[in-house]
Structure formats: C-alpha cells, structure tokens
Length: 274
Length: 107
Image (cartoon, rainbow over all chains, first blue to last red; front, side, top):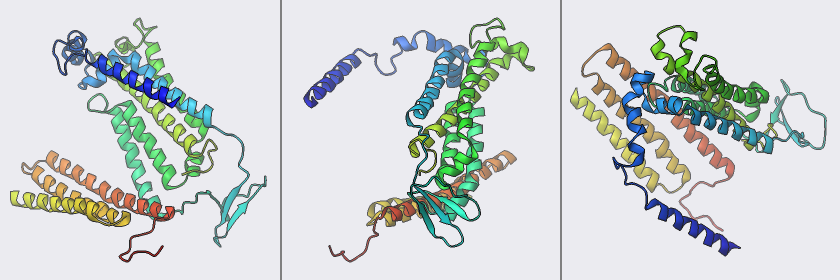
C-alpha cells in the first residue's frame, strides 16, 4: 500500500513537471496572460475606478465575483470548524483557585458549579500563571493592533492591504487577547453567537452590495450603478463600492479567525485552552 | 548632521551584529534569547534614530511627522520584543527545559 502511494506521488509529480515544460517563459510579453486583459486593466483601471491600487481594483471590481466566493470559502471554513469540533457536553473535571489563600480545588465528577467571582477563580488544566507583564503589555498593544487593522481595511484602495489582511490582523488581536489572558476572557467578552452572526453578516454585506446593483439596472457587483444612492462625486462610486465589500470581507475574516482559533484550541468546548 | 546619522547607523549595525553572533554562539535556548531580545531592540532604536535624523535634513512639518511615526515603531518594538522574549522564556520554564550549566550534569 505504501509502495503504491509512492508510485502515485512520483507519477503525479512527473506529470506536473512535464506540464510545466509547456508554460510560457517567465515575463514573456507574448504569453497569453499578458496579451489581452492585463494591458486593459493596467491602462484603464485608474480611469474607470479611481482606485490607485491596481491590485485592489482587479480583485474587488473586475474580479469581484471570484473574491466573493473566496469570502464564502472562508465562511465555510469557519462553519466546518464549528460543525466538526464544537462539543456541547460539559466537562466533569474542573479546577478552581481560592483567591485569598491560593488553594487549588480539583472538582471531580460533580455537576455543582462553584460561583466564580471574588472568592473563586477559574483555572485551566494546563495552567498558565497569570503573568502581569504579558497581560499589561498586551492590554496596551491590542487597541493599536486593532486600529492598524481598521487602517489596513480602509486603506485597501490606496496602498497594499484590504479586507482579508485587515481581517486577519484584527482576528490576531483577538487571539492575542485569548493567549495573554485566557480563553475564557475572550469567550465571555464576545459570545460565540456573535462571532457566528458577524461571519454571516460579513458575507451578507458583500453579496448585498452586489445584489443592490441589480435592481439599480446593472449587473451583479456593477458598482457604477450605485451612484444615485450615495451622495458625492459619482466618479468615486466604484472606489466606494470596493470599500464596502472590503469592510464585509474584513468582518467575515475576523469572525472566522476567532471561531477557528477558539474551536481548535479548546477542542470545541470553549472553556479552556492555550 | 551626517556624521551623527552615520554614527547612529553604525551603532545600530554593531548591536545587530552582536545579536546575530550571540544567537549563533550562545550555548542554550535561554541564553540565545538574551541577545535576540535585547540587542535587536537597542539596534532598532539606534537605526531608527539615525534614519529619523536623516529624514529631518529638509526640515518641515511633514518630515517631523514622519520622524515621529518612525519613533512610534521603536515604541512598539520596545514594548513587544522584550515581552515576547519574556513569555517565550516563561513557556520554556513551564515546559521543563533545564538551563545550561558549565558543569556537566550527572546522569
């Protein structure tokens, strides 16, 4: 069986290598990719969309359909993580710390849940001591990371960046919160339901902006038809449409990042983990 | 002015060199983190100091703003780099990695 696997892998690799031989050379001006569409994008993108960043213009406008389904792929990834890993059964073993004395209680096989508050404190099995330095620094830095993430989302039209990158940065700031405090802090602060709703809302914003274009008389995702709805210079409408979908992508990616992290780290229980 | 810039950049390079050599030459995990956390931080400070002064050649409000932004980078590196080192060392201690000693341990 192992031998068969090796043979298949080698065969596929050989086929792929054989296929690459037919590719046009690197940077060949006569290759099919650079003959027709690319020139058109490069020459007309700024005139048509008023977006200085060509990559964003291609990604969010000319190929908006593609990006829409990329966003839904990310949504599906979060959904799959939730469906496969989420475990609603309560754990029987629990650990508590009595705060005034520092005594640690190990509750086995009991349905009684101690009240967490002034007297007792939750503890994870893989206990991480609450480190003052890390907590404080992360508390200072997390708002700046989030601000930067918003900047990356909003500035996607003008400089490298956009919804996916900004969403990942925002999501990583939430993960940093979960690492520096503990998972419960994040889960208590933002409920699981909220993450799920945000992931769906993000995709909905994207699809919704696309769908509004249709009753306005254009094709799906044809932002130029949105001009009567938005006050201001009608030349900028395509840039504004892109900004709108970037925001949708950012929201979806942020929520999905958090969902994936929380589910994987706590084995679906959402109570303890890294 | 240029001399000051060159001086700062050289100092920064020296720190970075020390950090790189330290990461390769130090005997174990914890002592390797020491140059990685400290020298790089100070190296970045000196480098950005030099670049910020260089940027002020043609003094204007915008140039000043850009230099201030550069120092913002230094501020965040100063906050995050030692904290990251600290937490890595913490994780190493908790995972049970013994520190290096000059004598060979028995057994």
